[in-house]
Length: 290
Image (cartoon, rainbow, N blue to C red; front, side, top):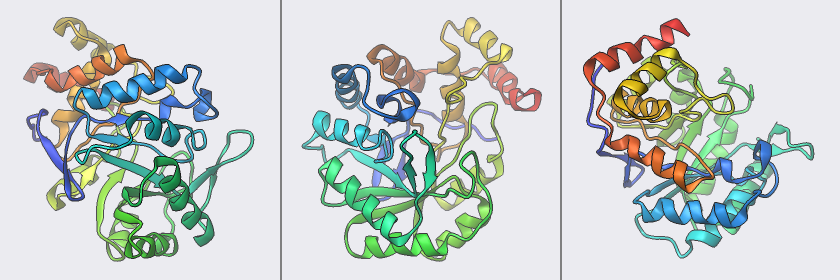
């Protein structure tokens, strides 16, 4: 497994972004549904992220729904030319907060227009098609029809770049025959390593890989090895988990989320954390033991 300098940048479409970004999902209410418990706090986190140098923010109009995009617009507009906002379509929220597929041409087109309106943009930087054959993980199935809709919206000038989320290698290959794919967003972290080979394949192609749930998601990573390494280095386990991801491959872009300014700074500090080789070897074994 190759090791790289975690402090550099990587291409996301036609932008070069810092590899440690910010995910806005946690700014919505409990279960990513409804308004935040602390609206002023949510706005403060977004402003502090950009003030701290973050230039890659991940969001979606189905977070809330509409909540995170409206917060981003209020906090950060007018946007810096250096800021890349990545959103995703392909799902909608039920009245009970459930996550439902939204793959029809009408639903996909409406989602792009909703994202544009709520973010206050004329063109979306990157739109990920979130595949929903299985809500909890990638599952095989054709993506030509929905991706063709998104590619047409790109030709209309509403979308600059296209990515894929929750996809298999076969779906990525299918997608690349339809449109240029600039990023893949799948679940991956220290313990959830199913995309190891895919990450390396994408790195060779110059395609960004953006792990969602880099810290475990709704069930934070738990590992005695992770805790032991963190204790020896005098940092938190989550900082170690992020630093390991940054060393894993040069095309990995991170989007850890938080609704706390203090936690935001803790996450961003992981970019400066140097992991010694013995710690890296220990951490590489976590997935095998999980």
